[in-house]
Image (cartoon, rainbow, N blue to C red):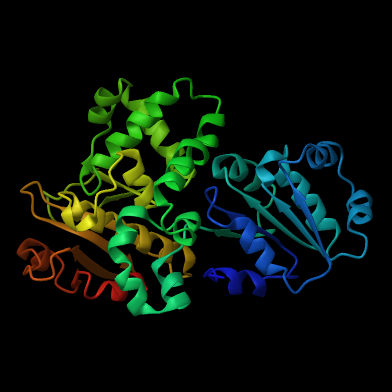
Amino acid sequence: MIQRQIQEDVQQKFFQGKAIIILGPRQVGKTTLLKQLVIEQESALWLNGDDYDVQQIFNEQVSALRIQSLLGDKKILLIDEAQRIEDIGLKIKRITDTLKDVQLIATGSSAFELLNSLNEPLTGRKWEYKLFPFSFKEMVNHHGLLEEKRQLLQRLVYGYYPEIVNFPGQELERLKLLTDSYLYKDILSWDGIQKPDRITKLLQALAFQVGSQVSYNELAQLCSMDSKTVEKYILLLEKCFVIFRIGSFSRNLRNELKTSKKIYFVDNGVRNALIANFSPAETRQDIGALWENFLMSERYKQNEYGSAFKNTYFWRLKSQQEIDFLEESNGEISAFEFKWNTQKSVRCPLAFRNAYPTAHFSVITPDNVEDFVF
């Protein structure tokens, strides 16, 4: 069993008077994590929000007496797929406020649904975590750094979804199932989407632009939409854990880009499935984009899992000088350039060095990948 990074932290939050919420895309192992969290706990009641009878229980007025009668002498209440239950935030609040000796844990895959009903009712009453596909760090902890670096070319193409990692040799059919079914299930349940083929076109366009600046106007033309609709769909895809955005860094120079965005995929396998390209990584023309997306997604996971607060950016001048990735934390700037070719010499742009002389600059290649994503 591959242990998830957040498992120990979640367990330490048990019985501190707050609900525990675990969000993440479908098929990343939220249910498996729940089982691991309570494997030594015999007093747990498991409810699935997809079940009609569970929805009926919660759709009626949920009283502390009724929940207590369901629990009996159990002290842990697990609600999987909690986004299926109407007004789940208010109901979790009622249970948490009333049954103070009960630990409630809820998972949800549709972040935009669940967060909309959670944030206000559960202010100050929840610990919130996000779970993603397996990470480089989790795999290193599972079978060692040497073995995971040997798998690097495989990860660049097929990604880290648990089904992909756990069933080698079946990557293509399982990624097709993942992208055809699970990827769109939550997205298309949103009332505002009338033409799902446009979501597919938008995702494909984003997949081909990984590592490049994104123009909503250009995407709108490619996908036969207006720019406002493109922006709305991108926000939705981000809330559904399919993509994430970073903005441009600007402090000192007049010719620094100030409003540009880059968009990356949370998982390389999903990105490659969208463009139907599973050619070996070492033979591909887009190896640079694969490498950049891989590093960005792994750093994204680590920043989400970690406790340190960091602002993330890319840097570019109108004259085309650029740096792939910047982090700002505690007043310090760290700059990173990503290169698949370990032999290529890279220097920090002089304009950046002059403007930010105290910034740290590093080049990340397959040789030192662990320094960046572990």
